[in-house]
Image (cartoon, rainbow over all chains, first blue to last red; front, top):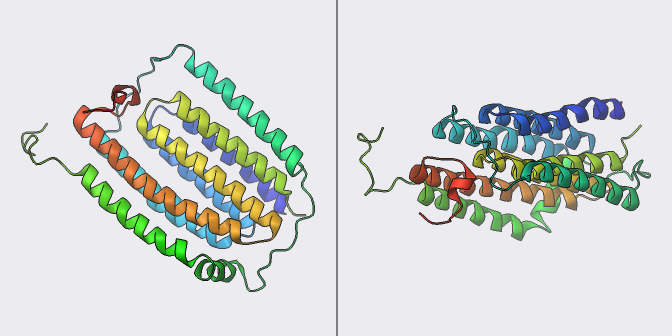
Length: 176
Length: 101
């Protein structure tokens, strides 16, 4: 059962990611990335990480991708990408390095864990994944958890300062 | 039968490599940014797979924090792209290579 879900979802995941690179239209790329993130949520459920699967759907597929689509719409969707290469032979070289990286990672997994894996121990979460994550988050990791709230505030203020329209620029009405 | 952890790790490596190729090949700043998100997601998958293998929840906590940092990073990165677009009227990374206004 587990294996069937994995083998159905994995090609969708890799296919969506690969198609994302080939899309000329940024909106299509964003939608394929959303599909990829949904499949990742399925993998998280297979790995008994139910809380993170929910977070993945809400935060990534929900909030972050909506932000991406907002910015794509703001910058204009009909712009074509310039296909001229600045560095000669950059694309074939990039693909070659990517294939090399896949080979290296597969080799590392094979040497480290074994491709077919070994016996998987039962998770130490008798009362469910959400409770286990909450207990770890609010006891051992409570200080980093609080620090992330500061990080989020700093990021929000920084984004406001960066994206604000300069007052001395062109007046809003005169801009095309 | 449970899916072997190695499958998830290979899948994670595959997604990470696709993301790296995307960063190298594409010239649109937004698509490059999406490829970086893909890389972050692939690493999260690897973290959770290792957490499953060890039977501990700590890897999931680390993946959770990496999601929070990714959210903050997306906000600032998109703000920078919008700021460059307001000045330069372009989202192409080659046009913003001098790092000054």
